Length: 349
Image (cartoon, rainbow, N blue to C red; front, side, top):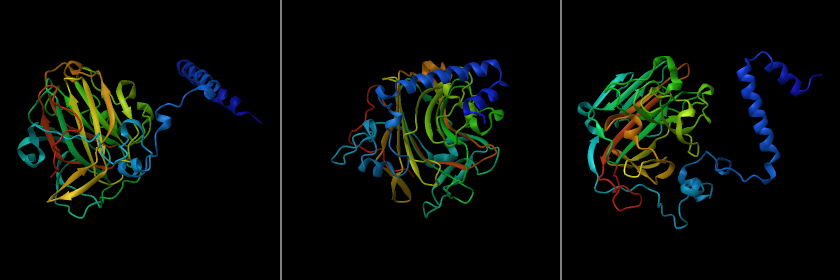
């Protein structure tokens, strides 16, 4: 009878020397980590709460710690409340203000999570194999000024329900390559529609664990860039990542706000899966900060003072429908973006 160590050694013997060397280095690191385990403090990732349940529910149970915790009085001091921003774009003007490429098209929200299907949306990909799409705001944004993008999103199967073993995800993209930039088709679904775009920074919402990209899991948000080189979804190019989020590819409505604050060289991502109906649209409730990346000056990174912003998505052999809606873009004077001030962004319609 062979031991597990013997079987492992035999299996590795046919691998290239570079791969064997990498595995041996990892074995040594794991052995050292195990030896020091009694004295090692838990990492932030090991202290994170469960992934199921809404952010609000998890916070009430004390399962969210640190930056994601709400105060004892129930006051959400991390909710982004924006005032005095100049509205640059609202997706109600989709016909005049958006350009589409690949599989992206105008649609209406299709999900069993809500009863009304009349809310306009941008369907980046349908629930079909080998899809690649992008949608961009037609005018460029000034990267020297802080801005906030707010949007709702929903990821479903072809019937509007939760995807079963779906893939791959979508991204919010800032890019100065060309107005209708689309990622490499050869990257498949794991490229999320942005891999290969030059002068690009992407905030990816990745719903499928891809080994070739060193994904941490199949449910994470990451800020990805290679500066002026073709962007990559591989996590060696991640500036910051979080998995401390609810399941996002579940057929339910989610809302997101992304703060691109050039004055403080940071990107902040806020997320919520709680919302309410308001008029003919939906309004987000109880945003929580899930990711903050510091020391990132987007304009300098991608080598441009202005850029197009939009959304990309892709599918491969596994697939799901990626939709965004209620997109709002606000621009601010330098130094005027902060959390916890008086006026709400408002509803997404």
